[in-house]
Amino acid sequence: MVIELLLIIAAIVLAALSVELKNLLQAAVCLCGMCIAVGLIFGLLNATYVMVFQLLIYAGATMVLFISVVMLTRRE
Image (tube, rainbow, N blue to C red):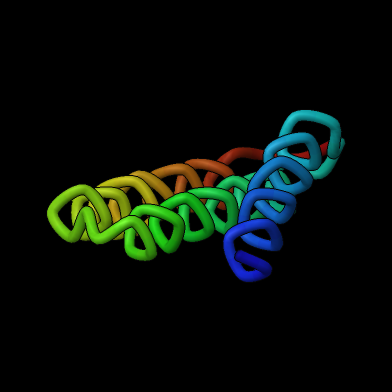
């Protein structure tokens, strides 16, 4: 019960940080952390297919794409 509550709070805080942060790289890392927290919540609910999909597709592939785009753009 405590682990689920901590993961829910972490997912909410990381989602809010990913919206509010000005630095795009930090926002992308927070979004990746939020995807990992949601994947772990699915794992605790014994939804293994959804957990693997969440971790591989969202936390893996999409975050690699976001971080590479952020790193390739020019900053002033």
